[in-house]
Image (cartoon, rainbow, N blue to C red; front, side, top):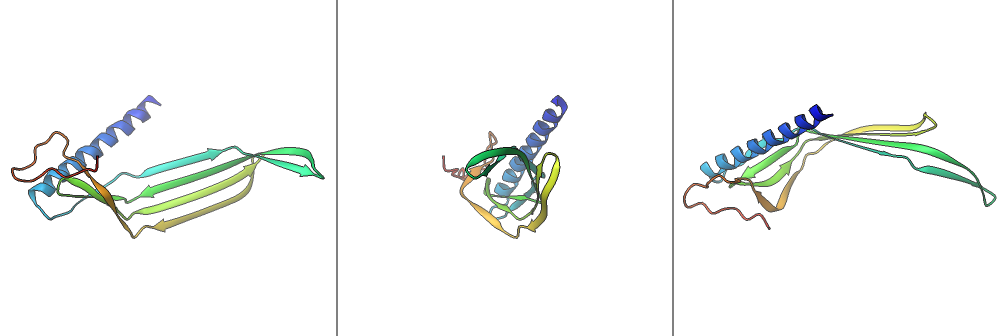
Length: 144
């Protein structure tokens, strides 16, 4: 578990450094966008609801269920311009859903969607950290 946490932290730090480097490059070349590929993201949700069966107004039985949902986000790109994160583009989302009762599969579904979309940020996020901007270039507003 400790190794997995360390891997996640190191990977996150590497992505942040790459975003900072893109911020500096975007300031050195004003008016350009610097795309930064973000790592894949996996999200898992598991719920354990009970299905109460009522017959003629009387509780007959509770059936424990397991609902498992998994999302996988891949090929997501951060867009950096003028020293700030300004948008997130595209990618692919894969989803799988599973429903089971007493370890018996009741239903399942899998799908994936290509995201052909660019989501501009309402408030660009300054990525330069402690690095100095080239002379004469104002620091981007980050909405904070």
